[in-house]
Length: 368
Image (cartoon, rainbow, N blue to C red; front, side):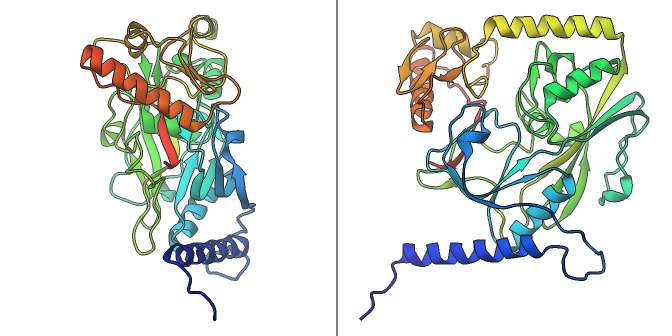
């Protein structure tokens, strides 16, 4: 007499079936005749890919499914297919500013490796016919630098300098991609994305594209309307972008336009070199995710952490950097649990001493 499957086993079976249907759909996409004559996606799905290979922390468990995309059309199509097959998605850009759970990430992780950019006078290089919706007119009076969301921000800043475009010099040492920078309103050395963003092209799986202005993105300090809460839901729940059949997935940044001005290449280069020198002198070189906590109003997270005596403190293979207390570094064997424990200790000590609740700047993804 066969034993009945447990609820957990039944759910695992349903999940496996969803994944198999999704993988089949990705493989077949574009091969069958269709009115649009869609080309094949040209995407390889990898099962159980270790995400430690793809994060600046060098930490992270496996993704159930992993795929790298090189064009925004691939990114958009893959997100739509995931929605149709009820597969949750998580977008991974440069792998900075995130802490991936040791248990890994359920569903599909999409590595955004889109790399196109262009500068021009006027609106942008974006074909406005690609965008649907009422808010497609955001006129630009200066030079517009347009970039795919997977373009490394530091690389884009260096390209802008070579082109004699001023406004992005502060970003020459900022890790991550354009998409992540837009979502988190990245900034350094007195500059930030909100100051130069003209528009962001986003897709809402199940609903289509929209062109959002800086005002519509509601930028705040290291935040925007697109940024999810940095801490995970109750223990055991997944963190990621839900994709539910019949509904709509969360917004995914496809591209962005930055309003820059003409500048002198030599002056821009000298300014950027100064920013790079300051970063190298003050920040650790070991694997990290960048600044762990946002600076509270009128103060600095690093100063507060150092004031409570935690600079240099370690748990397992994770250490609060002796060079900059608002960085946690991987000394070689750190787990996500080690880093999370340090974050919780920091929050508790700072609150006990100063009554200030530090807010994480890094996002936690996966199962916690």
